[in-house]
Length: 233
Image 1 (cartoon, rainbow, N blue to C red):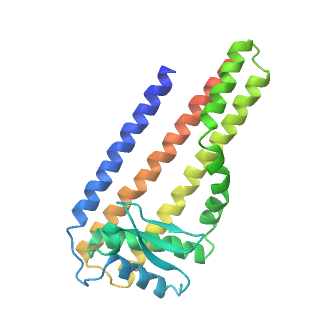
Image 2 (spheres, rainbow, N blue to C red; image 1 turned 90 degrees about the horizontal axis):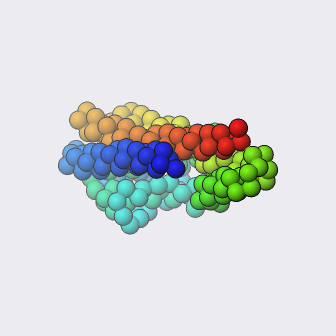
Image 3 (cartoon, helix red, strand yellow; image 1 turned 135 degrees about the vertical axis):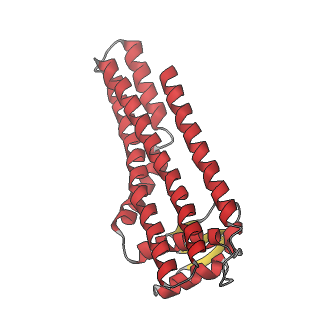
């Protein structure tokens, strides 16, 4: 178990460092005010309009970096620091979230796949580690390597595998949304060269948070898989 705690601790540390870096980037580019004077909400609405999307609403949501697109009720939810602000960071985040709305409207395959995984992952992700651990404990208690304990542990690994798959499917969804955002900002001349550079840098760091999460999920899955199949040997 010590190896597992070290692994989780290392992942948590990297995640914390990347998250802090993202916050510092957001703070930095929040000082780069847009020459066009548009707010994040106005940027979002214009991007939706430019893509012919009329059934998505842009709304404000409490908190910092809580921005997201909700495909169920078709809303672009912008945090308080994005919705009303008029800077490069706000433009980047607003355009990125609208990138998800464009994906939804165009039935982007990776977003469709992620949406299908959501119901499964929401049920299994919280219990997967406990199921694996319980199965291993049962194997140890009974001294039977291939008994019911093994199959319980494998079931837990399948649950964990679904969460890991979800994390990796999320990567192309997030990277593509950022790409769509940056292309639109540039093509429509929404930002200056300096503002564009800030928006691009901020979105790169945002994407890295998802990359760290995916690698962490994979590392955890591999660790527990080794424990389960190692115990069987």
